[in-house]
Image 1: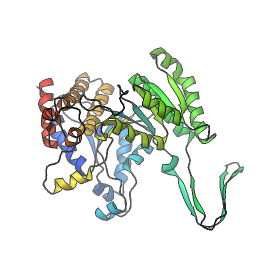
Image 2: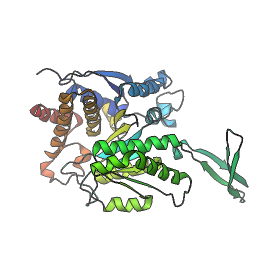
Image 3: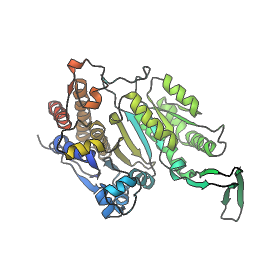
Image 4: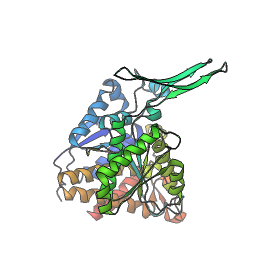
Length: 406
């Protein structure tokens, strides 16, 4: 059988540590034997980011905007310890944050459901997709340590010369306190709203959105107003045609509703809410390694990635020559998501079918009881029906089932 052909390359962003090792395994065993893989390759491993002073990350993001579909391996966001370990000249920013900013995207994360890995919330029957606004708020905040008495003010100087000033707080105690100022851009919030509504139309899911507008009557209320305005003017008719709904409520109310729900909707979250809730959902559904993640821009560009980190502990074991049982499912689904979207954009049904078969083979492997250690520890299957596999063994088991499907 000849290899499946591609017409337009994917943007391939390689990464760090154990996920970089798995990246090569997945390509060598599950992709290259079957697909004439065309990619525009960018090495986002820390050594190359250091060599290029992080220009490689900017170039990769711009390539994703140009080619429309990208797939990304997990990468290190260095802290002080990593700067020393990798002998870096500076503490580089998160590659994900850089890419999100350049692509102006929203991150959508959803659990991969398989038999034997049951949600801890028993009412959940369908995946819940977290849509995280990937700009501003605490992640772009400015902070001050005010360790003495004094007055804190929030000041905005308009281009027309007008000045708006609000007193924040008057510190009277000798030890003072701390201050934080956050911002967001109306343009970014509009992109967030459109990305959510577009993704809902694509995936045929309702949208739930929540802020704390009763307390934050300007900041959060602006999010609420922009979402409502764009929905009414641009998406309401399409939603009604598809039988979809847009639902707004307060963040504390939506958390309670999510726990009682059956799932099957998009939960749109501000940046911090999305950061926290996506990990909560991943754990409650089973495992962060069983979570898809895709960055979607309002102009229709996509970047697929694993939702987890670089699995540092397993990488050190790998360097010692030890076998690891690292879960590659999220990384496999990053590749299948990108291949499916590339096939959709280029009208290549054979490529789309391959991506779906690889996903099916991966799920079948787990449901047949062949699991990496993380899944074997939480499965509801009887112990005698579970085979604990190394990373290599797990990928080999997927390959065996994939070849039967092909």
